[in-house]
Amino acid sequence: MPFVVTLLTSELADKFGIKPNNFILYGPQGCGKTYISNRLAEETGMDTFFVNPSDLGSIYIHGTQGLIRDLFQKAEEKAKQNDRGCLLLVDEIDAHLPKRDMRGSEYLAGEVAEWLVQLNDCIQKNVFVIGMTNRLDCLDRAAIRHGRFDKVFFVDLPDATGREELLKMEVDKVPHETHIDYKGLAKMCEGFTAGDLSYVVKEAAGLAFSTCLNTHKDDLVIDEALLKKVLSATRPSVTTEELRQYRRIWDEFMNKNTTQRQTIGYRAYN
Image 1 (spheres, rainbow, N blue to C red):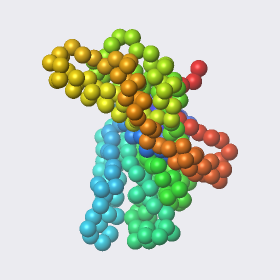
Image 2 (cartoon, rainbow, N blue to C red):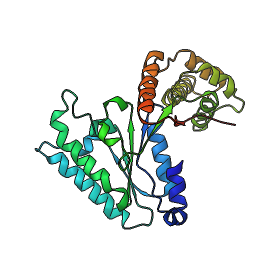
Image 3 (cartoon, helix red, strand yellow):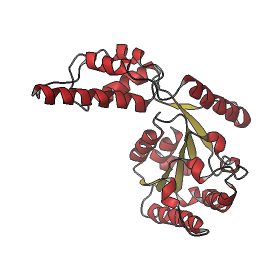
């Protein structure tokens, strides 16, 4: 991803006056937006703040605006202490930056304006922001422009190879039999999110644990049959209609903003 490449080749990037861009990860819930953001933070080695909507809530008038300013000031101070800067991972960015003309969001205009002001020059202070949302259509359009959030990436459902690798990753965390047909299991769970696959393995682990207790055996492991049993009883958390809606919003956004589709997530390419 350009964000990481720019940071890991900072001397060359500085030569050309290139800075990483703020960007947004958009897609259905459970597809790994938070996971991807955390891995990016690890790759870059930057000091990181994870920001939830509740972190900036205040009972005082204009109190949230002050908390937003404080957040960016703390990030700027952190950025001065290292040569790579500070990263803000903002979950549910649509709750921080809702459309100001939406019904019920009028009273948030001051908070939205404060975010926009802080985003304007944060990159020059080595403070970078990654926003995450599954409500791109609710985000204030003023935020999605060059200098604030330059790019929006669609984090889609994992493809077959992605599902296979995710299942392996989750199963490796618990006792399991050696030979499991992950490719066959991946075919059974088309339409599953990364979160769904994690749930399947945890549910299988819970069943194996219960069996150990009931049989007084402590050498039982998760096997392929148990995974198939759980998969057969599990439905995707994102329905076909919901996924169609996510993609429709994404298509509308891309048609308005660029002719190039940019998609990232759990997909494997040869």
